[in-house]
Amino acid sequence: MQILKDLGFELDPKNMTNAYWKSRAAEALALTTQDRDVYGCLDHTRGEGVRIFDIEGTEYLDVTGGVAVRALGLRYKPYLEFEEKINDVIRELPGMDFDAIPQTLLAEKLATLTPGDHKKRVVFTTSGGRAVEGCMKSAMDLSGKRRFVAFRPAFHGRTGYALALTSSNSKHKSGFPQGVDVVRVFYPYCYRCPYGTHVEDCSLECVEALRYALQVEGNDIAATVMEPLCGEGGLIVPPSKAVQGFYEVSKEFDAYFMSDEVQAGMGRTGKWCAMANHDVVPDYISMAKALGGGYPMGASIGPAPMYTSGSRHSETFSAEPKMSLLSLWVIKQIEDGDYLKKNAEKGAYLLKRLNELKDKYEVVGDVRGLGLMVGVEFVKDKKSKEKAPKLRDKIVKTAVQKHQLWILGAGQNCIRFTPSYVITQEELDDAVDRLDKSIADSI
Image 1 (cartoon, rainbow, N blue to C red):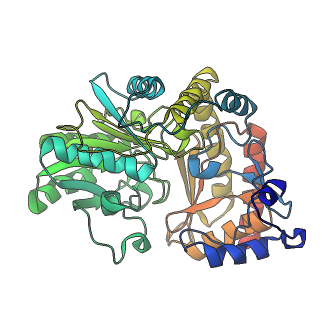
Image 2: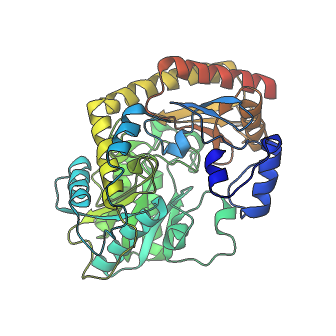
Image 3: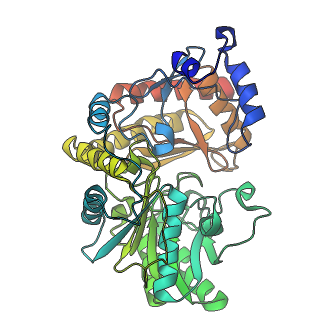
């Protein structure tokens, strides 16, 4: 309050309510992805670890991790100490126009962490969508081709070329022109296999569907772009043999293969890159979210030289020295804290606990995930598997408003767990218990 007063704002303490500030926000902010019917106005002066507060003082258990951004939770003391230590480091040095040591070291580090020992180059950016587009532009530049393979569902961003790849909600795309040509096939969704097969008798019809699509729609493909774990589309875990099949088909048609690691990367699934869970080495990798340590940082990682000449791609704000140092610090903390192993173990425990809810409730159709990226799919009943989007929405609202579980939906009828890596087993138990109560109160 004092800081805002110093900035010239006189705020009435009587107006410190969710209703007042949500109404005021609605008058000032463009409508984007807010759901003010569910969530309160967050208090940015309080919170620690996976505990957050709204401005009325309500405490929540957060399992969103800032939509997979906050790897180390809120107010992680060693992070705050390091941030203070580098407070005087110059921020405003355009990273694509001038070299600086921190961004070079960060690029070298990412090249060693990502799969494959081939020669790589890195382009830094400020968002996940831009990281995707940096890879796409490189693939077009190096191959001379303009067409891409993408999946349904898929989410790669809401801007330009990235939007062309996205297909998880018609609201994202309706009325906007297609930036590039896309050949689209079904994402491997074993719980709802569009080809009517089951895991035990699967003959990779989804892979053959891609081969056929390229034969009839055009095989001049620059790259296949795939999420190693479909996030926004519903937390879908593909079978590794299908991912490997898509990779092999891409190579048959002399195309690059790209892994979108924006949400699933940075160790969340127990591997630095989630694609490593499928034993596939992608040509391109897009990263963001947790990479920035809470700041807007993304990276496009691809084969050298990545672009055919200078000035083919650039961005003003690109891994400036201070942000690069913060990213390097986050990576070191993940390494030193053995978080890849911990995330895998915590994720397995979370799946176990959520599967107890699957056994308990007819409306819990499927539970799936890798590491600390887990989804729960809600259906009207297990036999029909009919999607229950209204029930999902009710459960989310009940969880947030009644049981103070800060959680997000995914896809049409799923919820997602992408908590900060610092979450404890006791907090995971607490989260599952709160979800249990929310389901019981909603059916």
